[in-house]
Image (cartoon, rainbow, N blue to C red; front, side, top):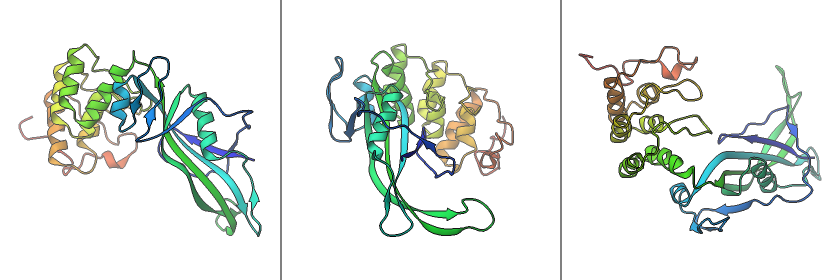
Length: 273
């Protein structure tokens, strides 16, 4: 029996309400890659060496999902342990990647084993350890060859990584500064503000980026820059650029998250504004 946890973020926690996944009749046609290995050609795609996500984006690939899969392989309450899942974590990862419409998965964690304590009862004020689960984990990014969408994704990547020349070139070629990453609903300005790339923030604003654009949780670029620890000088420079461009101060509490409380130590408004 296979229990699978699949998330779009890079964490996974056990849950008593696990979903039982049906076994696939045959492995899906999804290629597995490790960084440093070549990406095979797919429908005209160039073969590239997987050294960074930026290289994949330049070759026309786009990331469509992050997958984090945990499979209970064994239940150990007494010797010998009882085998549970017929499929390993990487096979399940391939199945989920195929269901998401991906063609390739870059693995950054492949079939890592870990143990978790079995507690009975699973919830309540008092519980007892009665054995262990042997868990197997695989994690990866799912990619699809979409050369028409790749320029916008390259802009997101370049803004996040502070590649000013690439940002300016893509904006000059007509790529929209309002490109949205479908995984987290963030825009280039969110990513540049979060990573404290002030000159990238300036370039995006100059090309018409919406200063108060909201991500999937309603947070603006200023919330990413000004009210998140640590309040470094570089991050505060980005926050100052956003405020000078007319950014509204985020309301408090920001979605109930106290980390966004605009304390004076977190990029305060400069005198004279």
